[in-house]
Amino acid sequence: MPRVLTESERERFLTERHIAVLSVAAEDGRPPASVPIWYHYSPGGNIRINTDASRRKAKLIKRAGVVTLVVQREEPPYQYVVVEGTVVDTTAPSPLEARQAIASRYLGEEGGREWVRSLGDYDSVLFTIRPERWLTADFSDDQ
Image 1: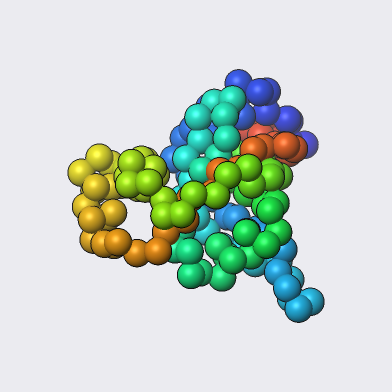
Image 2: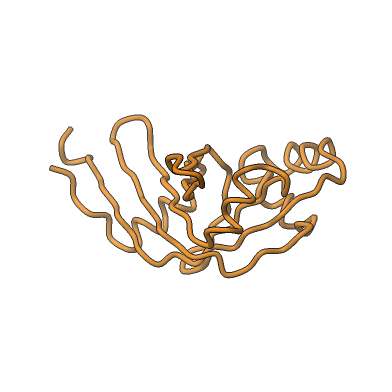
């Protein structure tokens, strides 16, 4: 049986580099849209995600105003954090420093800058999400 992560364990886990899966309500009776996404998180703060403003997920996030983010460790010991949150800020276009910070988290400083540079001046949007509910699990003791 998994145990619940403590707040400090959850904070540490979210600051580690993981690909998240973002889910947001869809329209026309379709199931929720779920997509892998990069994110930025500072302990005790909000979650920030950046995407192309013309993408379906961006339009759905704007419309719904709430999202679920699933962050998981895919190798043993399995752990995950599910965050339900409300979009508290939408900035378009995304500030360059925010795009670089998120990309650098996954690609390193130089790689992040190069990734952002390679995208040019696309129509970006930065969503800031306030975490409101958490669900966590740590399967370390099951090993």
